[in-house]
Image 1 (tube, rainbow, N blue to C red):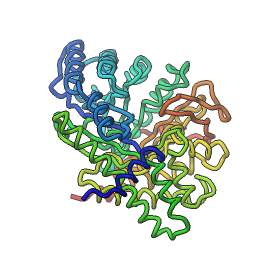
Image 2 (image 1 turned 135 degrees about the vertical axis):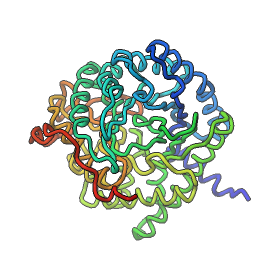
Image 3 (image 1 turned 90 degrees about the horizontal axis):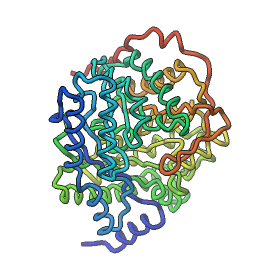
Image 4 (image 1 turned 180 degrees about the vertical axis):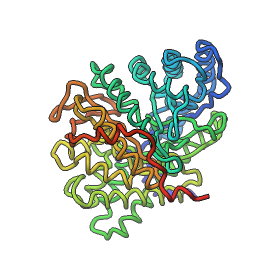
Length: 452
């Protein structure tokens, strides 16, 4: 029987607490687009994407109108382009990026992900050429997102790839320097990248995925914060239960949207990603959830413990609500996209080192963090290596999305607007790991990777 209280509660979540479905993302396989001719490859990719996702935006809008549920983004992810590029040149990969941009423009989507390479165990010639093309590709497109998986628990850490990505990040920052180095906001370095992630910039359509699939990312930090506030002075055990029940309700909304989109588009329903994805809007912050739990400020001692409990409770509640949970699923802590995180950095309560500690228990990693533009490649590589090692050692996804803001230093702010928000430049330890990075090679996989 329909419960009137549950209906009214959901309506209030949408109207008052910023509940939304953050993204409907259609994954599309491009394996049948392979061609030895780069121009023909671009044509086939454009045609496949625009035909496959022709009705994606309209379907999302129709579901919004029918159910009154805001769907913030409609996106596409594709097979990692390095796997379908064959022997084309780096310039050819830039052409492919522009074809992806044209497809995104035609469809009217927000972002397209999959300008990606998987190099955790080593680099193919195609992956090398794609990585070389990343700075130019991200400079000459607006909606194309890029990711490089440099490590996994099974393969270990490809330190040569990390050294390469330090250079790529710096070059991307320089080429987009006139726009706050925004190219770096569309580039992420992964360990254990999931193949069904609907969130940008790390989304790509994995090799084990079907021809097409619908993945949905839900959100709702404001809903969780409000529930914790209403719970008052209860114990942490009781608070965990409150978070679980709230995550259940949020996930059921995402499940409804995913099933409707799947039916209307005649595309298989893939997964629900449970991630609490914040925005710069007031009342939509993961940091504010942690503060509502009892911290004077996000970044205070106890922050990692509170975040661990939050992340666990969100997963438990979401898994009860849907049998198709995947992607990243947990709490995101991007600095520039979270009003509470921004405030904590600005007042000195939240440091890069504390953020790194928090990533050991949360959904992704060091995300949307602006650092001084003159930061050296070796320090960037060291930051990446530290973060990636957390993912490898703990058998979880971690990632780094750093923005070396060209011409900016600590005390300055960069502003991207929209969902990307703004970020204060965070101080960074300047002692160098140069000799460590220069050793190259692989950091072997941990012993617990041997599970066969």
